[in-house]
Amino acid sequence: MKQHFLPEVYLKEFRNKEGKLHCLDCSLLKFDRKVFDQPKYPAEVCRSKDFYTLKPSFKAKNPDIFDLSPLHIEKSFHAYESEYPKLITKIKSRQKALLIKDAHLLIYVLLDLKIRNNYYREKVVSKALKDILEYDLSELKKQIDLDSEGRFPDDAKEQFEKCSEKVKRDYIEYPEQHAESHLSSIAMARSRNDEMHVKISQHLQHFQWKVYISDHRFIITDNPGFSLDYNNVIHNTKFDKEVVVFFPLTPSMCLCVNTLKIDKRFEEINTQKVTTYERATDKLIDFINDNHNLYFSRYVFSDNANLINEVAFCINKKHFG
Image (cartoon, rainbow, N blue to C red; front, side, top):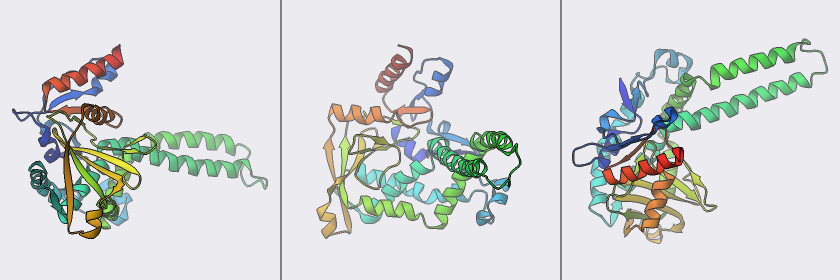
């Protein structure tokens, strides 16, 4: 079963008049081939077989989720995916304020798009696994190196090095391990009512929200959205403090949450979330589009053929000169 790690309801906002996404497949660069526009339907991209399926072998290793159905995680997305298009319609009508439940839903969805994403699995989860395992192995190695009581045989160090390398190959470099850890974290978060999602959503509501407007000039990747800290460092999933969050919602609208600016009206009346709208400058549009290239797995999308061709030209020039 093919499952989308970037849902169709999000991708559909970036379709052209023919219902397709102008698409660059950057995996071609690995084969020294130039990228070019290959229009695709949302159903054709950002998906993988059984991406969220809880397989029997995986459930057997995780007793806490043993009783969950194989499609438990996949089905957990359905409720908010059905509500998201209605919410985007409200934003496209430029409502001056969102109900708090709508504001919460928007942040919840955007956070979930980051966590459920293939980039998160490939880069964030795999790095976390590597760091944990290497720390544990280094601590064990210290015990062997500092052994003064003869608890380990003379060739223990050599045996440990061989065993350590095998563990790294079998565990760190094995994609199935990354998938299992990723799915386990999502399942556990769902069982705890997504406490982190709720916490971050409530946090971001205290700051000013602005939607920047362009004329179909925002691009996205298969891992949309990023944040900028006050040291001018770009982050994939930093939302908790001292950042400016950028998240394109449509080709013409990009949400910006600035944690340097308190929303005083929300502090007084927290039943609504005021959202302002402002035309983006060319410089800001370029900044948002350029920084989407830092964190993605494979695809770049737009509803604008001319724009995607400009992006393709820049990518090819960077890689091929």
